[in-house]
Length: 248
Image (cartoon, rainbow, N blue to C red; front, side):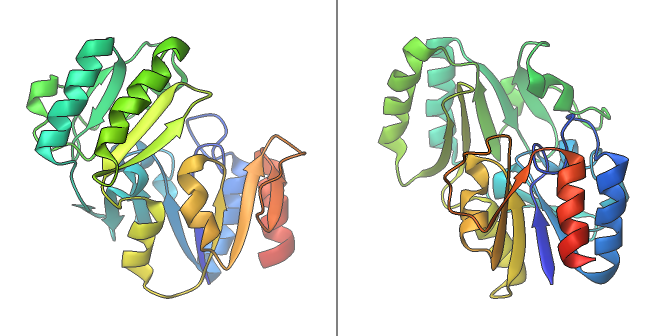
């Protein structure tokens, strides 16, 4: 069976590594099944977290980039005219951002932001000027003020059908990839019509979970009303316990 794991908030709860109690279980699972990791992180930032599984299939950047047997490939880039529009919005609203190229990135993000510690932790790439990113694969706009969020979303409505956009309203973030690029579409390109079991926790996991043979939603909200097969408490021990009980 194919198991697909989101990373942050699903199997990684500290922004740095998979805790030993869960890492051990995933390693055991990996001996019997095919394990795929699907993350919002680009491959550059995903590798340090799943270093013991670096030769597994890795889907990064919300589906915009993959690592297959250690070979990194871009699935699609954000078109240049749309990139120019996004840069205009960034400038107009003075937004914090991370713009990912295939490996290098351009970032303007406060060091106090939780995502900062996830940004190139092993110093595998370079933080370059925006002008140096010619072909972005993923853009995240960060810490958007409530007063500006709706206006910015309205501007992105002009690009409906031309980009894939995930709105994280509570965090004040917007994730952007190329048209029809998400974790599920990229997974589908890799595994075809094979069934899979999925674990996720966020809006960028929705399609991945919706099309899974069995879906596990990792959450801290016990009253969650989402219609997935199983809800799991958002800690490493709980996820490990479910995996052991059902699949080992």
